[in-house]
Length: 191
Image 1 (tube, rainbow, N blue to C red):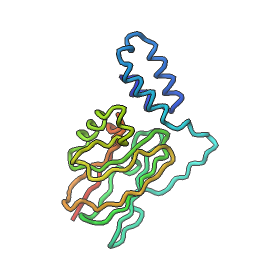
Image 2: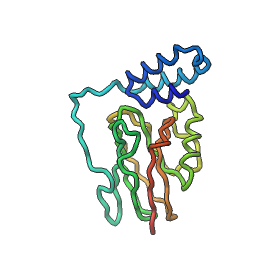
Image 3: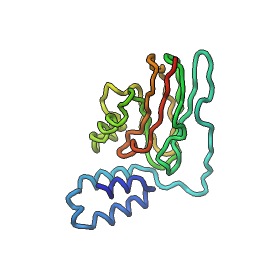
Image 4: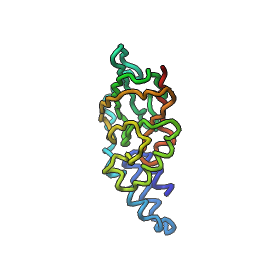
């Protein structure tokens, strides 16, 4: 299991090599489902990016803030398993436009959940197993306020939503298996 999770943190080619090398050991034959799942994850990832590709860095955080709409951009950090914006403050009930970008080689999503529910929702996503891909690793949970799609490398999505009416700290998290440990942030809702 450890090898399978570790392999998913590596670029595609290196991850497959680690997975195949560790699968050779007899003790790991017991975990064939885990290896099959990890292999599926790695094979769905895009091939490594060419070093010749230019990376365009865009500003993240609050991009614009009017009386009617707050526009926010959050992106993943390449090979860091983190969002580039660990915290955002918005007014309760305000219309929000979130631009979520994934320049990383691994697939990621972003899900806003009720206060204190990030780990529980992430574990529900993990329990989806191989079916998680079909559901973008978004479990059926009453604690999810909104969720992006599962984005591959270079993809971007716009999510429009209304900030929660109740002030508080609302965590956002990536629910792709194993990512929730590091990939999280906080939407602070104020009056």
